[in-house]
Length: 483
Image (cartoon, rainbow, N blue to C red):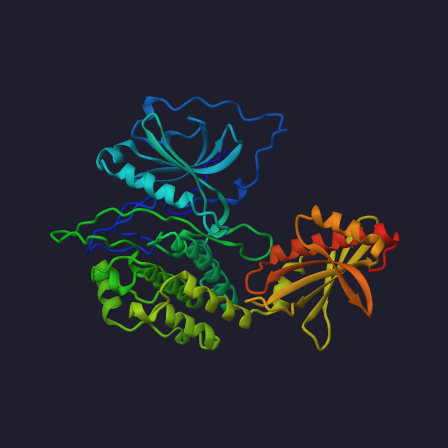
């Protein structure tokens, strides 16, 4: 297998005060907990039926001591290190296979030489890993295991097939407001799970946001890298105790010695949103000192200067998240969530969502019902059957507006209620309900999604699922193909 180029600098050195600051440099920071973005060409599972199955690899030997980047093709305990994805002063990260569980993962291996220079480093590493491992959320990259084998301390992380948000912005420069707000809202969901446990991220930035690989548009955002800090000394200057983060995304109060808090995570999130909307960073200082001065003395740029047509509610959210006064911005992700999702519901175009979900699907067609916010979707099925699915705004009291997906299975009668209940018991998604159609009760397959949160791929999968199961009910009850 050809070794791919690292997708981003996963394990890099920290910067010194007064040095030039590359865009992604983290000061006082060692991103050893960063989730690894798996290149798309490596995203497929191993083919167990291949005529040339993987052979058992030799175990790591002492000759690799102090050189974790030389583990390619070797085993480290139960892990087979297949491909080197990134390296840095503190270690290396691999696409690996947990051979007992047959689970692919991102395996981060610390350099023994680096560990020897900081006796407390491993303890901090383990404590942070344990904290992240207790976060179980679809918008947080999972940590599976932390341990040691021979001279190497390692962390097993979930692999994510896709790209970092930074990679996307490097290519596209800026995103549409609805897309930028959707990604921001998903990051906020992940951060909220962390903030509720008392865990502060401290380095929210596009490089640490991973987007899953999907066939329609940008995938789900997953926040990674709840990492630890490394002290940084400027030439002849004091150590800035507690200063953690990447300068471009750091709240002004951090430069004055304030302790990192959920509110400083929210400031960094606001800078990410500003970056997605405008294609640039708010301040252009070339050194940490310059960025400190700009953040502490200059007004945050008005997002409308670069995005004049931005909806008012989105511009106001940016201003709120990046407010210089910590007490005037969102105090944590839980406070930010409702406002973000409410704004996303207002600006998200359902027609555009359906276009992204279905326009490349050869077996699905959709049309809008004139004069209403409802859409008819027709799914072609095997045996020359088809099923019509309706997508409409749900009229309920949910805190966020819902999209309801439903499809008629057939006339409902008391004789078939037991059958419906039994099928409901084994449905992995959605449910069978009874709804009046032209005054006649019918069995319908129903599923709901948040209008703000649902991704195009998720919507497409849901429609296919509803169509398939509604058609099965119709065939069972009537033997016809009417709906």
